[in-house]
Length: 402
Image 1 (spheres, rainbow, N blue to C red):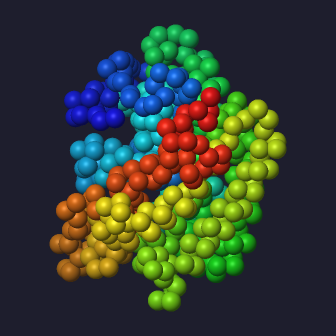
Image 2: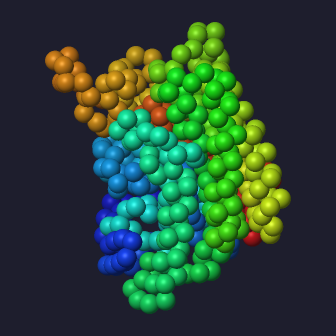
Image 3: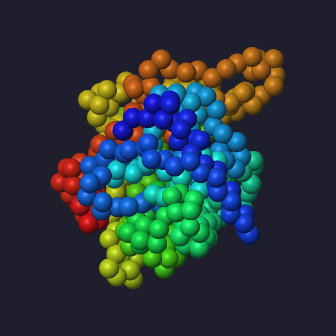
């Protein structure tokens, strides 16, 4: 699916949704001109999608709360910042396309949003476990998974009050949409990195995992209690392949694998995923008449590094957009893609970020997140059916939730 600039402007001007604890005011122009072209468009298996997660799937939540991601974010596909920390589309966008759904509006973004076919509660920097730091101190979001689930419950309650009358019926989900929707969770990476950034040892990070997953289990059960019966859960990716790990955390040259990834941090991600799968198995015993599809996000992403050349990637662990140049083009002490330099000394104040000529040849966009090309590669792997439990034949992703 492709959206040109005229359609994007129409999407952003379709209405105004303002939520408060006591009052909901909507101003709307319909999205009748929007037509998705996913393989599920005519099957209607999935009428809506609700997403929970971090920056890997944030379509504008953190930007609505704390300020929009600046250019060149959005340059490749939307041709303007779109709330995503990426040059284009995220994995959640490709999932929406596959399901024949519009791109999800961020729940926190009131202006120009339409929630009839779902909402996105993910925000960049989110964790499963609540962090005892502020966004300014650590970079981690106050909108933890528990907060996102509470936001969903409030959103559903208000939607069921207002969706029976115009103009709300054309921008809010119907009751059946909540019952039949796909609920996507892609979160956990920041729970590992937050420990490392607090100088935890590998053992201390490992010891924190059971508590993190116990909270994850409780939040999934809360969604199930709200009527969720179709889940897509994506496990965490290879942390040790990200420039912001490779430039900030300790490791030796011997710790690097043949693809330039730090093995100790990848091992921790795999351990987290093993325990996550055990947690999901317990959840499946408790949630009857529920479909749970688990996607191996680690293998999906790591295989892109293994098969980089075959997939057209020349740069795997170097950021397309960032400060510092060199091996990783990432120096958080100087700044991030699209931002002004953090330092104000004479050397730094006139610096600007380095932007690659062709994001298609890079897996990593800004040191933390993937390029659209990287996300597209992950999506292709997901829809091949080889990386999920249960597995499925290529082209039959939608049938998992029939």
